Image (cartoon, rainbow, N blue to C red):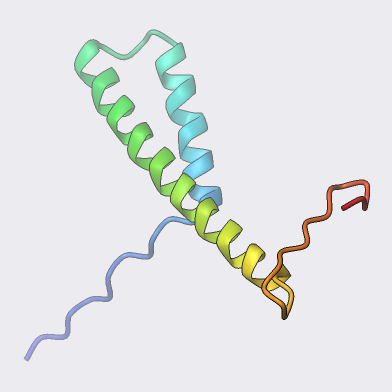
Length: 82
């Protein structure tokens, strides 16, 4: 019986953002031909969607934590005002 290797780790939000920056720089450089630019663009869209989903999940968790026992949600802005 052969041991299967563990699945590759899913990229973190920081990984996705770092790769998105690399993709933007590559696309802005005009060095990539059309085929390469399309591949980069597709990867960028996938990474952006993954980052958005991760952020939406984090936002949902934060809202859940902030939810009060009576079911209301108390949001405080950066100045401490509600």
